[in-house]
Image 1 (cartoon, rainbow, N blue to C red):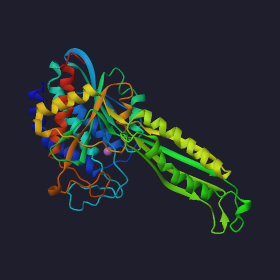
Image 2: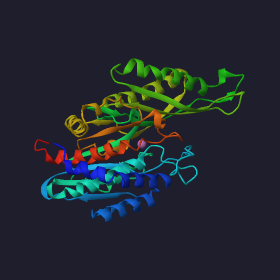
Image 3: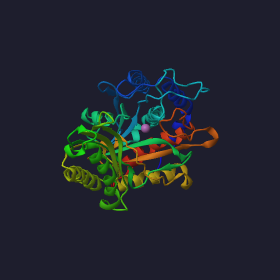
Image 4: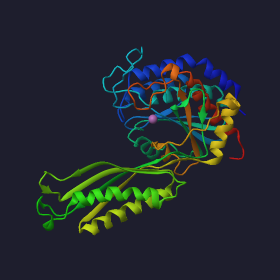
Length: 394
Ligand code: NI
């Protein structure tokens, strides 16, 4: 099922791929500021001969036209870095910008997709359809994918595939489970209004601090009593802003939090429960509540046939031992926006290797990747596209 020319091409371009990644690593750019990175991607596509359009303000959408007619499959890589200080002092290619770092491995995603593009371009005459290449900005603030979709990234696309290099997963392993992969990540703001007054005279007041405290304690019952134990969910209040002074009863309380879960019905149920808990907790004390629930990323739920295809590509290209079952993560990933109306899947490419010190958490200043994993990642991109287009039944 996989294509041996693609395999050979990826291996041939391995050193260039690592050099490309290291260059991006040394020059990290924050969301919506990926100007140099966009330029480097454009230059690489020019060198291969692949046409593209630049998206605004940053980002690239390219397309490899196959020699035979067929469907269009999209491959996506994100490109942005984080406002994190790199702590890897001994790296020859460490970040050259204080306070900015590729601490999530998006530099490797971009380099792997460029390398996959080289391989797919070599076999373009035999491709039964087209391969769309999406180089996406601003994943870390969950805005880039939505903007790329608006600017046409998945117009005419039949299937979409993405991946993340993953330090939690052992190096050499690849996971692409059917179903939940990343959680939805929503924002929550609850404002309670009571009546302020002297700290010694509660009878004349409605204490927003007591209302807010009670609400925070009640809230956890949503997870334990209102959602299925088989459907994981997290409700976190991370910030409370209550009151002004030690002897003044608080009139206002503003709480900020986040909600994570793995399917849309659970998400809707939690949202409704939060609104009910807020309103009724406030009512118990004679206060009022306002809930602002902001939808963040959707959960990433791998479509069954796409995930099974990715699994068979992994087995075919790398052997049964490479396939791994990684647990879903409660982190968010804006790849979900590409899959809102199009089937697809998202793989995790293991890069955790304690001997190389590449098992640090994503977003940590010591994060780094095992570059040996990149060959598999790049090949998976290319072979997934190849195999998808070869299939008649999809
Ligand atoms: Ni990331």
